[in-house]
Length: 95
Image (cartoon, rainbow, N blue to C red; front, side, top):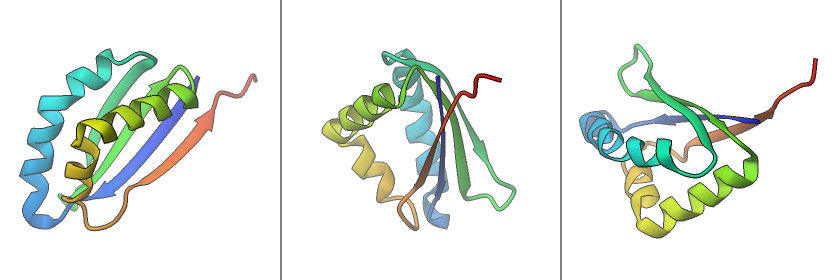
């Protein structure tokens, strides 16, 4: 299983728009092949979002990102952020 941590800082004037896009689109993400779990958190600064996601594999997540790029949603979200989002991947440790 792959843990994905995505962090993005929204432009101050775009926070509400980001939240509305997430509400409209996260149900599709949760239903996407390989997605086990996704939750979004907003920092106390009111504009830093952190997404905690569990995927069957990094390949599943990359396929999902490619799909979101094709639909235009990825570009729309990125345009609402101050900078490019940070994405980190972690694999389960058999311990």
